[in-house]
Amino acid sequence: MSGGTSLTVNGQLRSIAAEPQAMLLDVLRSELGLKAARFGCGEGLCGSCRVLVDGRAVASCDMPLWSVAGKAITTVEGLGTPEAPHPIQTALIAEQAMQCGYCISGIMISAVALLAETPEPSETAIREALDPNLCRCGAHIRIIRAVHRAAAEMQARVA
Image (cartoon, rainbow, N blue to C red; front, side, top):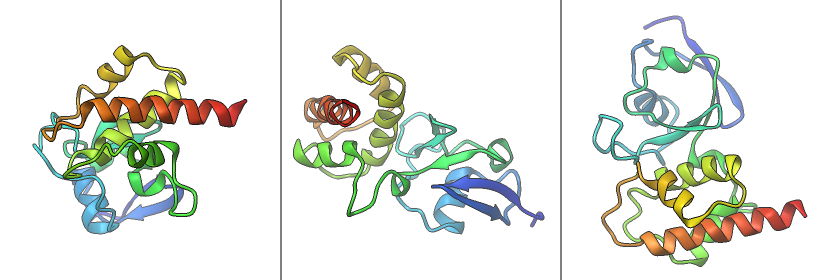
């Protein structure tokens, strides 16, 4: 084990006692007990392991710990609380946009990154932002509606 890698996870500074080449996904799940990001393909292609790193949606399954040292990591667990959920969380529920749930945490992360960059995205922008996330359950139309709903809610909060 190495001496530790420092990073901020969901707003808390953490020192991680794992080898620098350990994958971020493994550290989040095994060391920190954050289970929302899931292992899918192991090659960064399916989106189920996506987290925010300094505000960018990235695959955590093929990202070594050393590459995120000193950076801010946000997982789905850090988006909101049961008392104050993130607008994307409430919108997905309102639109009944989840079925099996395996891919949804990665989709939430991609949507949050999009809405931070593009507060009023077009349907095309939403589809492009969610393209790296594989989902086989057929909830795509409801997911797109949920992202639009979250964008509107976030805009209403600003106004």
